[in-house]
Length: 570
Image 1: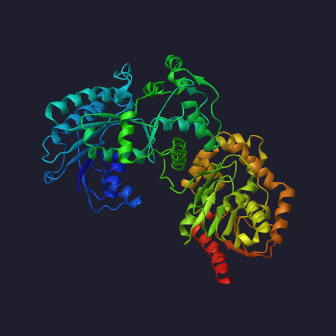
Image 2: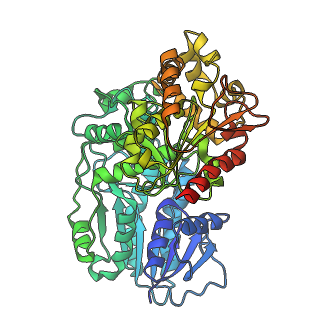
Image 3: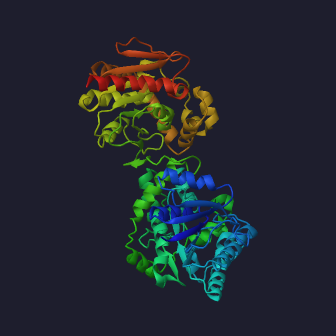
């Protein structure tokens, strides 16, 4: 059995390498910075990785002995994967040099002491292969400069000491947890701040999938002819930057910039005007890269790169779900034909639609309290979903559903629920209407001001929570973040005005009378109905228009009652 040590094992690439090695049945020492132990093991548990062969130890590559524990048995360690690096923009020279240069040399010295050493695999960057690059200048960026400086030093040091070193030069590695580099451009695209693209028509910012790259790395020691060599690992089929951004824009349901600005121009403009980090500009280039050596390794190992467009779209889903690293991502969430959905897509017991001005995050605590799988979506044009007809959302969602779920709507979301239930009673088992807006007083404060959309877009999360009378938390943070994006606040106000129109209220009242499946209505004492209804009514004490946020357990219990009744009836 091959025994390995992974340095920087809690990092973005390091943890993926650890997971791949463990999944192959290997014995792995995961060396992490002090305090990072739980971060690695928690990530592995979330991935359902068997940790039987894992030992996690503290490590400091800036120390000559790597700061490894004295009792670490190194007799059987054959392969070293050095994923320890300081990858960030804005680093100081000393900080970058200590890890990326000195730390890497310390790693080689330590490797030379291992009696059974087979291979050292070290990671650096793909721009190393560009001979005339100006990234060796620490004034332009310490990360890039430290990598350029360390590369020839490591090669010489390994050759002098007879260490079998292999260097992997990846491009932008994309996967869950990658928030550096290209991610900032996607962030600007998502929030409407990307007025123009840097570079030109042929600008090439190549990518490579995280899982593919981790698998590539662990296959290197098994191929004897890879020792003493370096490999540029990237997807040469990556679209040029304008097309790459267009792919992402179409997936995210936002507009792609129509213009480009040459890097030479951006460099001359004030950063306050361009918003461009000077350290990122060397990556905005037209250079192409020779991947033939890496491609040969991949063929021998039987590896196939996933399509670049698929990698980009999956990564974009993660970025939006995590709010670009601000919160824990929902692995079930993503865009489907422009609609943001989360949860069980084929056999949900409940399908829930939100009201306004919140989004589907407003159901998080209710979903957690329901002892059954659920599916939620952001209404078209609202939250994270691309513009579209609100009443079209359930036909789209239910296209993949094979169960007969209970449909749950809050406020504005009650409309599409009633429309679908009335048209397709055979596809649903029941309906729950939470604070149905068409049965309550017309919306007031948001509709009175002609500047309502502007006010809503500028409102902070704390101010939004105060205005709505709901607790601050992730649901409000998500709503505020989405309302700050171009067009969302305007469409929110338009949707509220449409829902408040007398003809819409009359239409929904008529649909409520025609629905043949069981219906339960939930309202708070501070936000009562304006009319008597024949359907079952549950009143929750001490809450207003958003009981799912103030009393989630009680709302979940009312929803579950309908679910239990329909199961019993069948």
